[in-house]
Length: 253
Length: 253
DNA sequence: GAGTGGTCTAGACCACGGG
DNA sequence: CCGTGGTCTAGACCACTCC
Image (cartoon, rainbow over all chains, first blue to last red; front, side):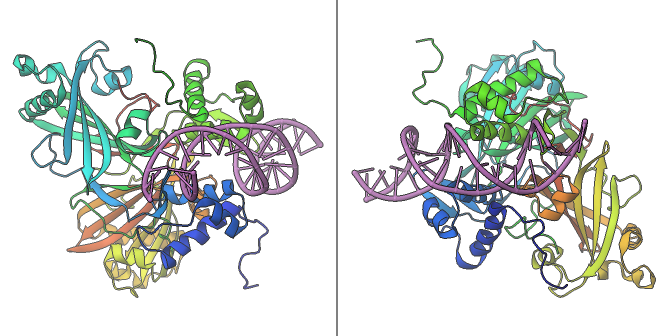
């Protein structure tokens, strides 16, 4: 028969709800508009609040909605394209990059970081904390690890820590000859400190970008940056952005 | 005082549970081992099953666990590095790429795709479906869009659709001179068809990679690939992989 | 204080996989 | 068939924001 798919395999309520709400968002709501509260919505659709919330979580994960405790649920703007890789490689801190140094300490890094840097487990590294803002919103938090041996001329600097120290480390990095870099992207969940900086709750989905910077035939620095997964689309390549519609769902024929 | 943080801001139970389980996974379990079932675990920790499930969902999102209905919950292996960008750009279908053509149709694409391709809304495009396997597991499903005008010499081919047609389209692509490409990565949720191909449930988190291929001064093809977010770490750059530990959580000092 | 989303409970039933 | 994880319910209370 030419009828629509028989529900021999009925889809879950929350999935169907997600679809219905998604279409409603397209046709009946505009960016920034606030939705009815969860209790009302659940009643309107005749489901438990938990079920409705499952649908809302999906839509939030897809960047369609934004929910804030004490405030409400609003229609999210399209994800912003955020450039994280470029053809012309550049050191972190190069003039014009979007990051803002926050702090800097010197310590022995976690073993996972030492593995990335390929340093001895006890070697000290500068740990630079930076944050990235776009359109007034925090979009990423980064920890940049620079082995002390990568920036040997830094010893005479007076600032022992803080943003000034961070800038000094970044400045020293510029003097090295960057030979290459590579990155990896994976899904993670925000730790408490990152969550706070990103204005999200702990456990919020983030895209973790791990980047190694090569100079002098070795790994001279490494960066671990966590981007808000709900608001960011990470772009790699020549142009710095693929213009697409807001909905990663409506992408097939 | 030097005591640990007072719980003036008590963390949620599920978040604490997540931490406890995460540490247990590190110390007391090995890859592939099956955990006790959810009802037992919930009872053991003195929480409701829903709360325990919230913790397990977090760990699954982070790639630490794998859950399968009717089977159980197992400890997941470290995420596999999957190369999605390379310095030496290459057309999809170049010898040695990891994709396997599945099918091919010709149709007018959704408007979102037409926007990416910068084609007229009514222009026909070849839609090549491909899948990518690694270590015997499906890791990605792709839709590759090639405007018919990009491969004009294809008209004489007999196969109207199917894998043979897909290979023919890919072969024609190789004849063009690839001038560049760029990609974007964002979080999405698997549609029903992708979910099936990826052996996951609908709504499972995926990393959506949108790539544009440039040739002849225009966008000659576009690819929308959905990768399993639980099992994949997408790598960009020269080497094709940053060797890191399995835990995106244990990444700070 | 009123209203919002976030957490948590204690159940029930369903869909799936394997013996 | 049984045991597993997946879905769903109808409540309760908490944390937060704004007025």
